[in-house]
Length: 221
Image (tube, rainbow, N blue to C red; front, side):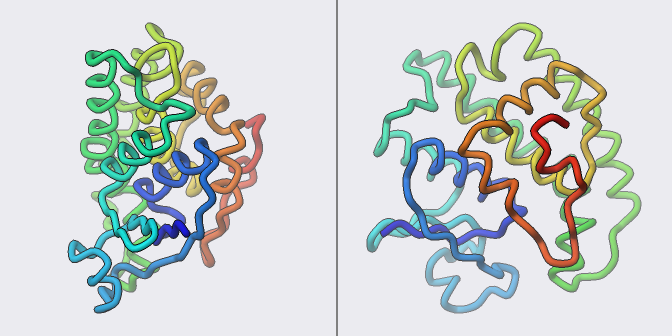
């Protein structure tokens, strides 16, 4: 029995879900209102964060650690290259999106527009929203620069770096905060990821009170 405690519009949870689905690992999804910090959830993860993956009696937290554990426990299909320098590049880009992109964009757009209302912590801070809307352009430009040199973000094969980026962008696409017309290379890259069977469960997510735009589920967007 494998169980994932998650929230639908968490990029960190989505990265783990993509990894599980790509490796065709059956998992039970359990939505967790982590912000309520219930004693039961804190026993599962004292950090009070999702995702949390339960494999038999073992509990694992932190999305990158979970994904790399899955990569070692279920090596096929491979989402990390064998070459040590190539593995470094994958980890560097995962950290780029889970740290820098998250801090500058995801937390300023998704968390302000959606999480505040869900968690009852007030109204969006327009300064944060404006900052995130500006910074996402920089990140899309950087992705386009990478994709001018490579087939995928970290190299010539799809890796965890692509899943990390797609997890963040898919959450932002759910609230129409990605300008897909800015770079054709980025849009084409996302279309490849979006068309994979492992991505379909994400497209089926629905957050009450926040209907996705019509293009969200459209593969030809």
